[in-house]
Length: 484
Ligand SMILES: Nc1ncnc2c1ncn2[C@@H]1O[C@H](COP(=O)(O)OP(=O)(O)OP(=O)(O)O)[C@@H](O)[C@H]1O
Ligand SMILES: [Mg+2]
Image 1 (cartoon, rainbow, N blue to C red):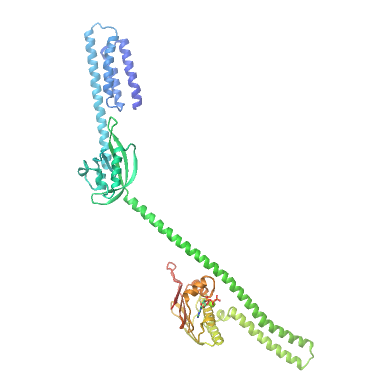
Image 2 (image 1 turned 135 degrees about the vertical axis):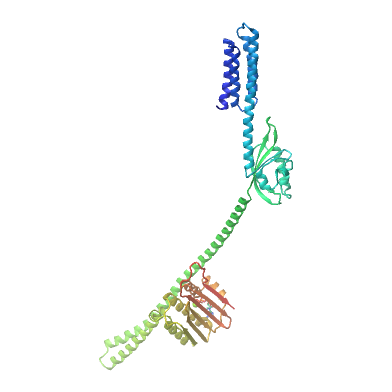
């Protein structure tokens, strides 16, 4: 039965008993009804309820005596009523003790819960003195109940936090509702720990404010994890920003590079058109004139002269076309490999520019993979073109060298040298493409490039390509520049 039904039933039982008592005059057994009403108080939380019902029943027993029909033996009737009232009071006493026993049991259980909690649970008077201190509080703060009970709660506030002390005292005096806040507390061994505190007001049976209860949870670990996460997040943010800046820089360089590439393509086309027009076009025109002469002239000696001229023109034409084609893509590279192609190209450049060329090749009997051959050739082509354009060099040393693990090409000139860092800078701004193209080719073929140059003492370009597959997990250095 719940307390609501009991509250309704008790007045009904009392009323029914008094009515039956008045109307039927059942005599001394009437106390059974009242005792039943008292028994129902077991389901009512209010502890003095059984005595109140017993008091009402005592009065009503007298009322029933007065209002019921007079008895033939009045003394016995009075005695019966007195015994009935006594029995009702005895029942009330038993019910009260049963309720107390129930309450003790509930209090014991609550005590056990408080004691076994890993949170600190304590109570404090409005003046800030500790009145209860559980095992959880001992575990968190290191003080035993004996040390803390009767002592000030301010012991738990770190010394430099004066404001917290004032605030805590005002809280224990005036807290009206349950609330939770985060704070820093001091342990017995002097550590400052982060805690979460839930305070609630404590009232006595009459509803008077007698202090506060506090449930304190150690959240140092949680705070540490939060701080770690926040720092990791900030580091990540910084990294993302750095990467974004790098990416936008790379994007910019890429745009510059692609516009420079288009420009170079245009220049190459116009060079081709010029060569076709000036060299091959001229020769074809001369050839046409010779052939027209043969067509319109008289058969004889003149024809033989024109035909000899034409044949010489055709020879010239063939040489021009071959040179043009070789410049575009030397077939030597595809057919015979890097060494003959490099030798042919270097010799031709040396002859054109008047250099003393020294070419040394080692361990290149077997051909290396095509992407490496093409990269070496194109980079040598660009490097030698640069030497011709800028270096004013006398001697060129070319070394091509293969070991078990890698192939190395070194191109060295004794020219004027240059500032590599600022030349790369200018290239990245889109002013040239040669150096960046070298780096790009080396990167694509999986190698490394080192350029070192000293003013007045020439330039050395070193390329190295691994012949075995590199470890993909290993970050690779692709280009290094040195300028002295
Ligand atoms: N061997 C060298 N000796 C002296 N200076 C050099 C040498 N190689 C390169 N340079 C300098 O480095 C700069 C950049 O070279 P890069 O090949 O990128 O440009 P470029 O040859 O001027 O133009 P592009 O190659 O795009 O047609 C050159 O302008 C030149 O000043
Ligand atoms: Mg160049």
